[in-house]
Image (tube, rainbow over all chains, first blue to last red; front, top):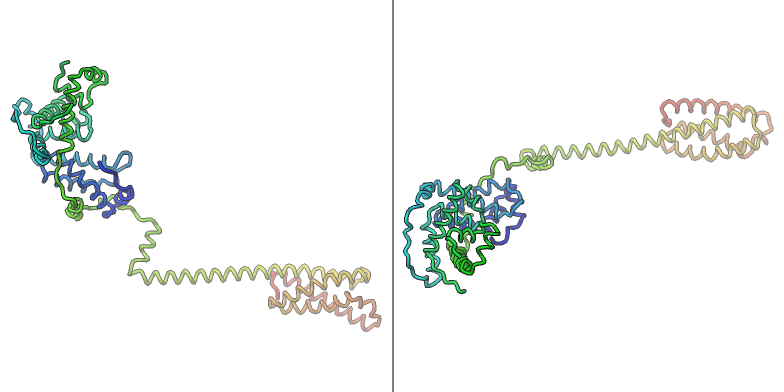
Length: 183
Length: 237
């Protein structure tokens, strides 16, 4: 996350100043959208979540306390909104947990991306092949730094199930990606 | 050392205990596999992006600005001062506001005048009390002079002292519109002047002594009357 927004905008926005909140939106818009995109692997969903996140954030501004960073607070709203959004989008998260035994349909061999653009497409494709729960779990754990226990609680699943979900997600992603590492 | 994929993932995510992690990391093979895993995850971390235009923040604000509503509980009751200020800014109350301000100015002016008047009254009372004291001393002097209880030198000294204060009080009474008081003090001044100059002892003719005695009696009566009058309400008449 880039530098935090100036405290004065937060204070004014807490008092209901919409123009001050505009500064906050301009400052964090891309970060919120990027996280939403990681959760959904879908640009349209990410856009909807970003909008909902900021609308909810404005209404919740009076409850924000500076015990932790504003960006942390805002991205937690993004996470919760993403989970709600995927549930509402009728993507059966529970069903995805029952696909443990399904064979992962991933090509065993693939080309090393020729350039950055291809690499990004490949990664986006890999993410989109994850189930919603897997994508949420791997993003919360790896990108947002939630513990397994916290991730499990947020997704309303058991800790062991969360570990399995994470494991499957990592496996799927790695099967999609070939990375050369120089030793 | 053999390590399962799941363990490797937990090691990467920091979910193993420090002892377990330390034990696993002793193996070069584990280190190599962990490095590969970290590189893969880092690729996702850095490369997975949703391309957004530079002015995405502005676009997003345009889409949500009309949806943003301030929750009711955010409204705070304005302070008393703010309410008064708002009231003055309300057009329909502008005339009433102007009238109220005018009334306040008039009230302040009236109160200011009252203070001045009060101060004047206080000064007059103070002067009246001092004149009363002066009249008491003058009464004693006139009584002594009438009864010839003191020697001429003592009467002269006393008259000289009273004469000085009498002139001051006479001027003060005149400036406070105390015509009667000023007249009395003026008459008193003549008697005091005569005694201060040692005149009584030199006035040896009988008519002159008789006249002075009569004037002294009359003045003594006036002084007593004036004292009683001033003692009632401490005003100078």
